Image 1 (tube, rainbow, N blue to C red):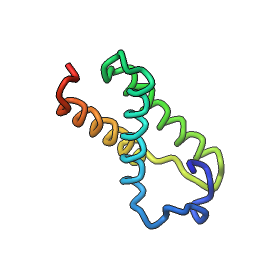
Image 2: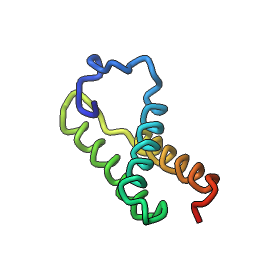
Image 3: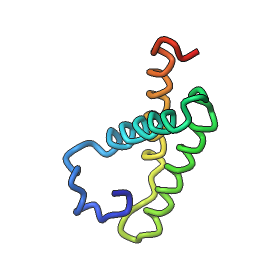
Length: 93
């Protein structure tokens, strides 16, 4: 989905930044499920943020998509949103 042409996006009706935030919130949850014995550590957040940056670089390289700092910020908002939910969930300390 990250590098398909914009006109081929089946989720075009949903706000782009919201899609980024939700996607990275879910990715962080999956990362936590993959390594359940480690808490929501900073290394997970940094890896996912770097992944978001790599996606933007790949989009720039396509020629029909563009690099967006706003998308990276939306990725970060989703990651922080997951951390906020993680802190609120009992038993995560």
